[in-house]
Length: 338
Image (cartoon, rainbow, N blue to C red; front, side, top):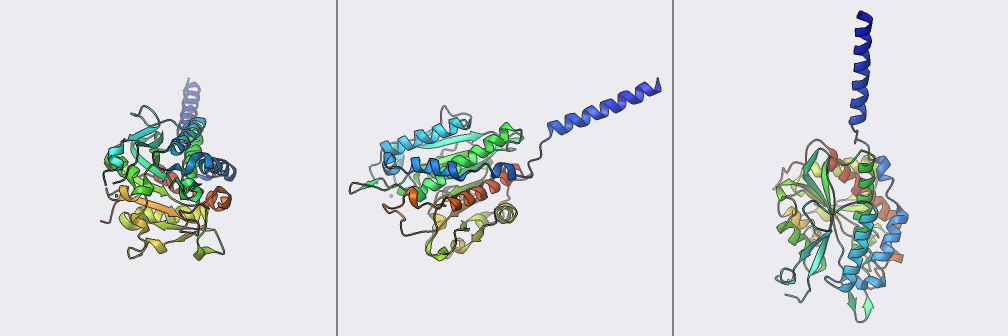
């Protein structure tokens, strides 16, 4: 009788241990999913998003809407749904809002949204953003905006693909992630302003914004290497966010982090010039990844052929591993600065 009891206890303990190991998930190492970020896929998507067919993606234009449909198609292919509470992948923005402030004649436009729900803290949301509009057609020539911000647009889609695969494998993010493509950036950060004032998820529950705007080229100051990225804003509100960015880069990406434009006295004021700023204004820790200005900035030669796809891939991987840590760490980044 005693032998049977001992055997049953051992069997029970073994079974419980197995169940626990199967049920638990270790999201400490993102390497497998970081390596799913593909230079080939980024290039394929960018050649479409920045093609003449998209007519420069002017806010509310036929070309921008066509680009948006392509992007939604990529999300559907990668099994990344639209957010809970939404009826589709669009957040519609009325023309009245777009024209209310910097008094233009823009038509209605849309932010594009995709979403992965967190497994343990679904009410806490990380936003990964990029603008998908550009400046359209001027004097009959298409301004394709491959770097600005086709590069950020395809990076966000590729990051979503990697997180979707992680979720399929049982390693989905513990917090929810909103993949946010905003419109109207070139006219005054309108799309991100609209989202921040009309959020799908409470601003108080938004833990951080990772904003990606121009990561496919190099500037004059880095003429000899593309193994760098400018990091702007990470420490403006949160020491945690800065430390996470630095640590994840040192561990996984190993690109040079250039903080030149993070100086509050920077005359370029890049911190105030991209979509993360509309999150930071609401007290949300935000980091902006940027390759700097080059000779084709807002020019007709910002084309897919000039993108350095190895640099685009490295920088996308950096944004991914920072997102991985933010989505899976025990505590959200603390706001410790005004």
